[in-house]
Length: 58
Length: 379
Image 1 (cartoon, rainbow over the protein chains, first blue to last red):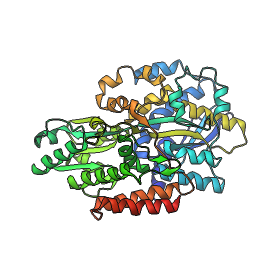
Image 2 (image 1 turned 120 degrees about the vertical axis):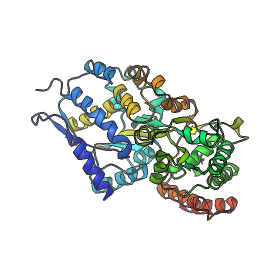
Image 3 (image 1 turned 90 degrees about the vertical axis):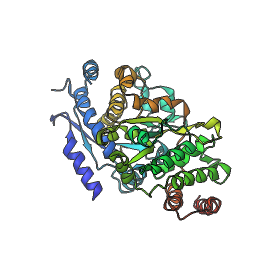
Image 4 (image 1 turned 60 degrees about the vertical axis):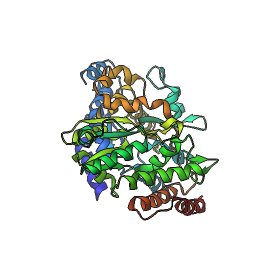
């Protein structure tokens, strides 16, 4: 149950992170440990990653 | 953070949009490895997984993790991007890089300076005898003593006490706790836990007791510094180097195990674009930007050199996070136990150590003998 909850928390927090551009988008799946430590880290990283990957896509 | 944002503007690159789906988080590194093994069997692997530095080898041995060499070879400025040999060596197996370190940690001491002052402890302990003396003062003042994180993932504190004596936990393919250093490690753990009358805390309860300000000291990974800062009561917190063993290496650790994790590519996709996207993500989170954000949000040390430029005067403003950085010269292997039963060996050591924590074990030589017999049966 705990894993399900943390998984849901991750999905709620990050969801399918990336801009909506179905024509060009590629989905990847990622898993990391210790939600108590790294949720906040990925919350900080993902906006930067999104900017780096969507800058020139239409 | 503003500094990051400005620098990030100049680092934007053209890539197709990549949507990242996060799977349920692993509870710890043992769970991370066990989950990947299950997913490999069922054909349901993610594209990127974060694995404990001590758990990478089994993924390489089983052919689950992909070599990153072909991807690195295509990078025009990989070294310039801050990926240096010492960092890559943490994830190199058989001469090939299989992971990129995401976070590096060392064990440190966390101190509630207010509680220590109230108990008359006027200096931070430098060895375990001094820690126990501080416990005695705390108890005399009616305060709680400590949480010593023996139950941390991967027998990390056992390995820390072995490395303190400059003795590796694994030697010649076998667990190396059967000798004098192993006995000294168990004796030291017993003296800390019984000398400080430490309850048999779970990890959560030990950290909660420290954060609530009811105990004076906590020995744990520097990784939790961000969460401790966020959760702690109103007291002055200081971190300090992991204590040494009195009479060993002048009372300071000879070496310490490198904790943390690495990002590994485990994608089974036959779509080159998806595999490239996974590499793009893996590289980004371990880049200078990713590593700097790890340092900002946790207590981990950024493995990527490029993070240092981005972090600027971060450590002078956050001296508690500097403790782990200053211990970097001591970094040594965090060993995985060889063979199919590596995870089971970890659990055997945990179970025997719990007998110390509960006070059920008194004679450490007997405990050592029984534990080694069980370990050797598994190897």
